Amino acid sequence: MTDAARDIAISEITLDEVTPELIGGILEHLEHGRVDDIRTMVARLSPTGVAWLLEQMAPDPRTQLIGILKDNLDPETLVELDAEVRDEVLENLEPKDIAAAAQELNTDDAAEIIDDLPEVERREVLSELPAAERAAIEQDLGAALGESARMAPKRNNIDRFERQRFITGVTDGFVDFTYHGWQPELVRHAITVEDVRWAADLLGRLSDRQWHDAFRAGGYSDALSARFIQKIKSNIAQARELSSAAPESVEGRR
Image 1 (cartoon, rainbow, N blue to C red):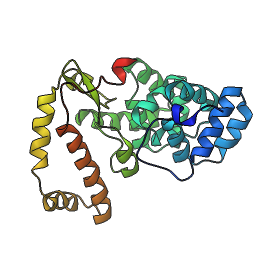
Image 2 (tube, rainbow, N blue to C red):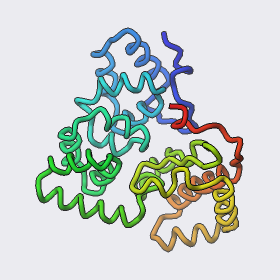
Image 3 (spheres, one colour):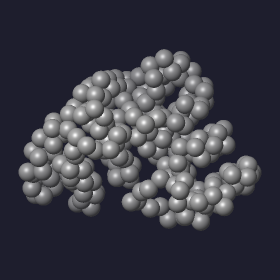
């Protein structure tokens, strides 16, 4: 059997339905080309489970798995995926297939997925949509553009926000963020380690009461606020610990 520990990405978060045994079994089936067995195992998972499974795979087995699953992938899985992994999945889908998936999602989710696409492919996907749905999604995309794209997963999706990586490394003194949206030049090779530390130090001065007051003003429950705040503080801590000698980014090694 393939060594699952070697092929699974390291993560601090777990999901009960995606067990190490299931991942190990799928890796073994991939190694021996047992496509039907893989589809049977994955069919038992929820869209969140399939997303989590794909996120745990190393690049090579993940690419193989995407090729097997892409024709029958639940559109909700695209919504649940981390932005970086979702990009890999979308690269394997035709514009008409992405458009078909978008029609099964609500407008916000469809817009988020289409927002991740390169401009040319985005236009191709939109052209495949019925006029009314295209207009609704384009309106939502316009609102997203006004926010200068997204530095985190879809608004208020705490499960995805907790899974989303914040900083992936440092390249030539500039910080690499998990960012797959509009106007990438705003953050790519533009923000130095010192800039990030400075911003993190300012945010780190906020008290727990200030954080909770801000989320309470936004209508969040105490429980949901606590989860968002914990993740934000984790991101701030990561930013404060940055050094110019930080490891080269994952994207920079590809």
